Length: 188
Image (cartoon, rainbow, N blue to C red; front, side, top):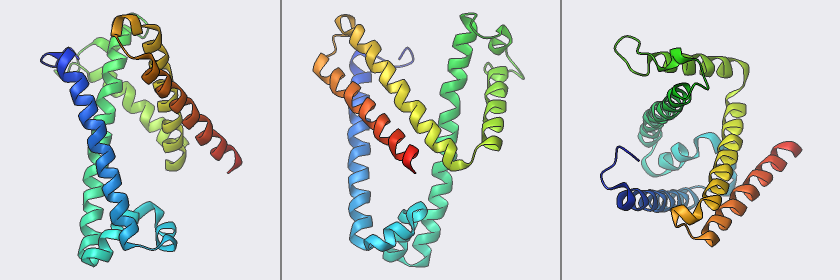
């Protein structure tokens, strides 16, 4: 938030716009997929259903284009997923809760040692877990984090001026999502 001009006004606006934009995109993608593929085709091609739907519209070129777009999307997601935790590692190290070396520059890069530490963690996890297990574990961890953030917001609602009914909706939604996902994985 400290890097944004007028964060009190622009941060809430950006969050709401981004959530609404993502919801709209997901709804449109769902309509395209359902409009171009049968339910058995969707189930059969679950990992590459968007490419299959694009193939139904544009032929083999559409399938290839969607595959290339998926590579760029994955690269972008990996890139954006790395910087948040690296920054968090540095901040925790500055507060003396992790080794001080994680705050030091490496090759004129402020996040050098933290980036190497995080990279090692990623390599260990990716070699010990399957891609499906990594994705499922990440989803569960994100739901736990969102739950904790919402609890913190509830406790600080008198400072943040947040509406408690919205916070409770988020808490119950996050907890419900966690337990449904966890139950689904447990019986799988």
